[in-house]
Amino acid sequence: MTFRRLSLRPGAAILATLTALGAASPVLADAPSAEFIARSAPAGNYLAARLAIAERDTSAAAAYYRELVRIFPRSGELLERAFLTLLAEGSIDEAVDLAQRIVRIDPEHTLARLVLGVKAIKGKQYVTARSNLRRSGQGAIAELNSTLLTAWSQFGSGNARAGVAAIDALQGPEWYAGFKDFHAGLILDAAGVKKEAGQRLESALKIDPRTLRVVDGYARWASRNAGKDVAIETFEAFDRLVPNDPLVSRSIEQLKAGKTLPPLVTTPAGGAAEALYSIGAALGRQGGEDLALVYLQLGRWLDPSHALIDITLADLFESMKRHEDAIALYEQVPASSPFKINAEVQRALNLDAVGKFDDARAVLEKVVADNPKDQRSIMALGDVLRSNEQFAEAAAVYTKAIDQLQTPAAADWMLFYFRGTCYERTKHWDKSEADLKKALALKPDQPHVLNYLGYSWIDQGVNLDQGTEMIRKAVSLRPDDGFFIDSLGWAYYRTGHYDDAVRELERAVELKPNEAVINDHLGDAYWKVGRKLEARFKWNHARDLKPEPDELVDIERKIAVGLDEAERVKAGKAEVQKTEVTPATPAEPQKAAVDKTQENVRQDGGG
Image (cartoon, rainbow, N blue to C red; front, side, top):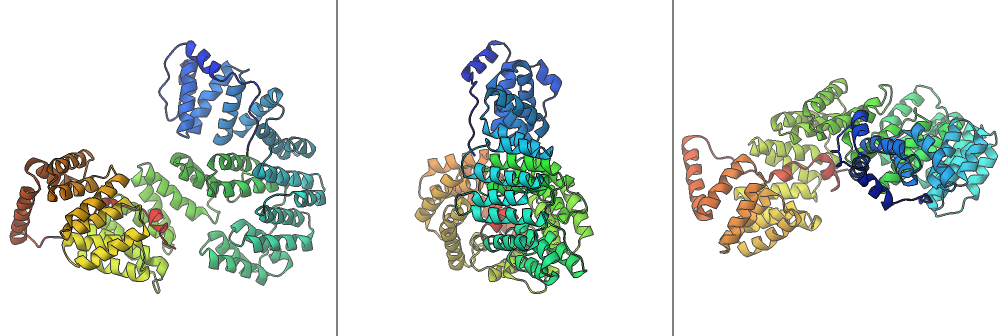
């Protein structure tokens, strides 16, 4: 969406004026207090607000801009910045007040008109809504959104046919078709026009059979008009495409118990919220996070009961690294919601992301205790334990999930892979190797498994040719992955192909310059080809990158005495340990590969 900027734009003059007023910029706080902001100089608040926006901390930015608007109530630029920030933060009532002030300065400010249109729908002022929506923007997204909201306002005025006609009159790109049929069908269903509603919803389903809301909308209509068997089959078809959705499972259960399902939307505000949600969710999936945030926040304000807006908004915050905001929204999902288990799992993962491991663990342990057969919850608990180096406990959790499998399928490779990495980290190599081989049998071209098993063999000095070939295959599948290329370089190093090792390890360092283990490996390779000054430089760099404690000891020894003597010392210690204590355990593969999260691994075909 594009929107006209305010005509009153002091621009750089504002910053100059603010700066002339005095003091230095305040330090950006996580949650600046009103008292702190009021005491700060306007110049500092302005700069802090801009920094907060750059860091996508909309709560802090909104607090600073509120104060600036209070001091400079006629500044068009500050009004607009505050307005946009309040929208993104979800402070819609305040944003409405600023929108009313903005259109007095710039009557054609498109986003302000959209907000006023939404506000009018919420207040059941449908004629006023349409007056504002007509001026709410140009461009494919803005025109689709304006048309759908206008159609729902017509439904609110008691003229569903006019709403559908407005939708059908909209011309635009091919991807409009699914939105048009879906919302026309919802309007007709809410208006009791049964046959046409079913035709439009069925058409939307044919266009977009993988979107849950479209499936839900048609299945609900079918449960009341075409028979429960049709509704069940609709949900089951979606389950074959996107398995184990909790809403689908609950709906099938209700239908089999003899219940029918009400229309997806019954009010103009609910329909407008659905339109904002539909477009906002699509934008969020396609990289338009900022506009998606505005649409979703407006939809949430219109219909706080919408089943999926909170979840989608929380997912969006998560993707933007706004973990605390995501946590707050996941926590608000009611216990009665079919999405509650998923919300709790995601809340725990976000708690872990902000360093609250104990809280995350407690949440997941409760979810697993309450839902002992929920594989995703069990796996999430294992992932959190593994990412926090609780490898033995993680292995036990993955075992619990594996024991519940009837016949492992291709999608189950991750369970064996992650348990295998945990066994390797706890020095149970036989179990680790068996699990990694099982993961590879389930998913033969999985690059993470190929890399991990191949690297482990190479590092132990066994199955060198097979291990090298597996790593080559992993690199061919992920040619820009610095960790995989490091593995290939290390394979060449361990097989005595030092020039090849240097070539690959230099490429790995270019891709991952701040990984201690890769710099350490390149230092070793440089030493072997006689580039000893560069070797020490790389070891020094690896040391400064805070490697694991046992790796740090080896690196410092190499810096002090060189690689040849360091290897003799290490070999002597290993021989003493082998003779006097227990057999030596395999060398540890690079930690960065071990710590790949489930989400990252899933990108390589996890199913």
